[in-house]
Image 1 (cartoon, rainbow, N blue to C red):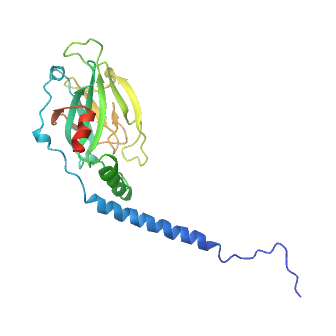
Image 2: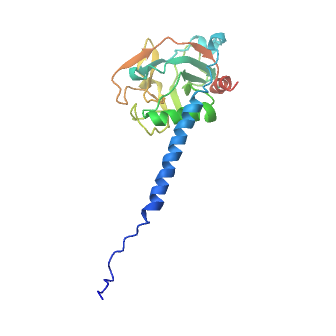
Image 3: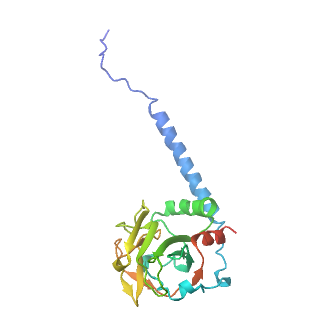
Length: 228
């Protein structure tokens, strides 16, 4: 009788079965997710009828130096379709920019993310990002803001095609913004439309948007439009 070595490795033929079974189920769930995303994508909600809405006419907006938006040329398929101006207080004007859509750099993730946004999260295809024009207390009409605040909408140093984007917050002095015709330039730095006060994000070609549909309303008013 041949001796059996104590440390001899005995192959376990069944050890790979649980792993392969898990991989098969994972593939099934991914495929189902893609199919679900494609199916729900067909149920896009139409945009509100912005043409029936009035432009801002309140006195606090009459002399407002409305921002100019620098948008990456590569994001031209998701244009700005409206900009809302709403007074949160006597010293703060909320600016909410409505983009037609936002596209994740990875196509598969974009399909699933679109479905999540359209059908579960915000009930809209459009992307809405807001910031605040902050004025000195007791300011007079025509006074420039003292700062611009980006609550969870500041890009930092992230690139346009960042796959995992972080929403930063920042409040920057008004003097730190480039001006054109005395209007502050807001750079749309990332694919999901986070803002910056300067050119960055690896973007080399910018399109300046100075003329856009101006409407009156706060961010809360905008969200109500999409949930009707």
